[in-house]
Image (cartoon, rainbow, N blue to C red):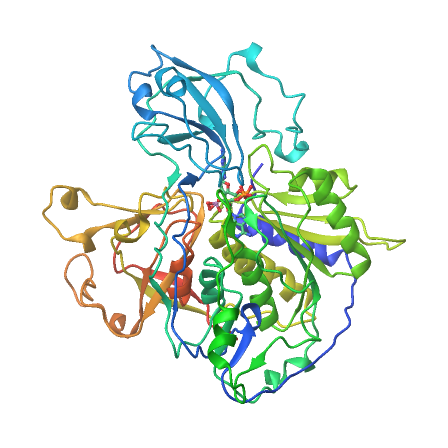
Length: 556
Ligand SMILES: Nc1nc2c(c(=O)[nH]1)N[C@H]1C(S)=C(S)[C@@H](COP(=O)(O)OP(=O)(O)OC[C@H]3O[C@@H](n4cnc5c(N)ncnc54)[C@H](O)[C@@H]3O)O[C@H]1N2
Ligand code: MOO
């Protein structure tokens, strides 16, 4: 059962109340002059010394936003409760698989394939399987169930949504064309400028650059005094990313990042161009794979907050056994916290929560009514030796913006309550909501983050321009939207009057906030965002000009 955001926070606090933990600290610094090449995840707060453009389309291929079934939407047009349509399940497509090429047979008959979140859509000549339906939205004939195989059973807390093994599925309603399909290039296209020379690097920029395969960046030199961070206590935090589709391009140093400096000074280098070129060559991406943006995002953010991220090598295979083995080998590192990404929702390979249980640990909560980040899990696995308390573990969803939201709004609660180290204050302020036209930026990606912009009735008839749109979200969900803060009034902002046209004093003093995306996977929006807009539970519709909570994303 999903818990509310406030329940999730109080469970984290209660969990920590029951522990009494201290953590050691360490410090280091390095110095250099001239432009330097530094590892991307060490570059937050530094200034870019050159432009960075995308070297691939992102996502690189059309892929599924949900765990479910991929089929031809046109064949579902006649489906209704009185005319249920049955589809044969021909096979399964996992994230990391090469895109399947459909046969004529596949296209002619009432067939479908299981497809997992992030898995490539099948290739076809035009017609093809264009849409995915979530597995929770189909029905199964009883004799088709076989939950005893395939490691599908995911433990007590996930049994409600584990992926059934079925030979046939039945639909009672048409599937809209291209549903739940994330389209190649909808985030950004090859050649798009992702970050300009002179920009101060934020974790959001780390996210977008790493999703195009950048590992090191050229930055301006500075006197590295580490901003006094060494005086603060740090938590040692293990980072483990899962998913066989995630290319292991970011050979992030395993173990702590602190002791070594990976920067290369170009000041006295006679072969600067060649060095930069060699360090900025994009690694080759296999079909069906994506670059890992979660690990660099987590490492860089935690590092900039003064913690000590430790990269745990990715599991050798995408199996529960290999994942559990990695967790076991990380235990002697004496970690204060483990953060994993991916594998927590409803797919066949989503084994993180069940692995926590299999390792003898416990789940404190799994799923919260937040978007993005709904499937997030928090729990504990037993420690290595005779420790009385185990190692706390956050299982964050795989979608990069869900990772960012969960880090900011759940993991920071843990850090603050642990108190040892720096956790950024929420930097709360309020701003007035702008309702931009998301469609310009969203491609055809579904609103996996659960919040969208809808037209008012007047807008639908074409009588008003887009500022008449409003934000709509599920009533009891809390939404976190990566947004841009405008200190001066944007041209298309609504007026400072109330519904009756009366001027509201003081309203013109507030900044404006422009949500940039409602998707959980568009990393480019994260690179442009400087704050989060928080849309609370209990309210579905947010009008343009409405006052909302704003949380800064600026590096501390
Ligand atoms: N049938 C359903 N499908 C999905 C549901 C659901 O309720 N029913 N929930 C959706 C939501 S919400 C989210 S969020 C995602 C999260 O799923 P997982 O945590 O299991 O994550 P994955 O499936 O492994 O990956 C999701 C997505 O993110 C990409 N990814 C994974 N790791 C990385 C990385 N290190 N760097 C960049 N991108 C990464 C991955 O390729 C997928 O596209 O599930 C929905 N599905
Ligand atoms: O809740 Mo998931 O995090 O799309 O976005």
